[in-house]
Length: 265
Image 1 (spheres, rainbow, N blue to C red):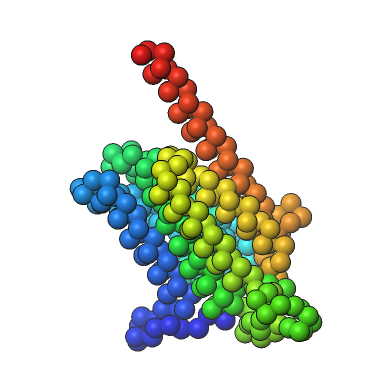
Image 2: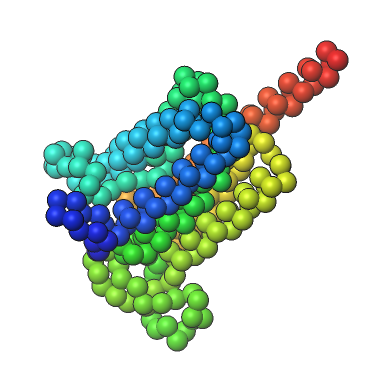
């Protein structure tokens, strides 16, 4: 189930794509604003890095989805490149998009740590939009419950699944969007106070992995299994580990450089 938001003859935009696109555009706008505040001429190079990350992320998201569902795509190889038919995994977008962004930042001479700090502010916006998109498209839905009367109104509602079947379900999608709002408030506070420069994106990604791992226990949408668990939860934990390790290495390097500077002084 993926209702159409805009139909202009040959151009058809689904509700899912519209919501997700709006979130990405908002995130890009926020990143450009941060670049302009950094230096008016920095907006274009920073945008170049973001566009490279988005393009590489799209490829990575599709490749991970295909890999996880290879039993299907092995017999339908003609659909592998057909992104318009759906099937993206955001973990793959990060796995490929962030290294591509780092490489683009070196070429365009963009300070990568500051770019990631700006990207950390845009990430929750894209996350909120993605969860709302899932709600409209009937994906990433929660477990079905016996009756709405057994739960508080904010916890359950009648929602469709991917096949359009409406039933009383746990409000996982709304919980995901609310979690994104919490992350947005947190990163805005951190940026306002000037805390954790260079570490903000890795903190937000680590928290994202943690929160979505726990939300995964309440999701009922079908997904491939990996290591006897939902594949998305396995990758959520991997995101937590990689982000924590990366942030730790950056912090240790910064501390060592400060010690060397103090020694020379």
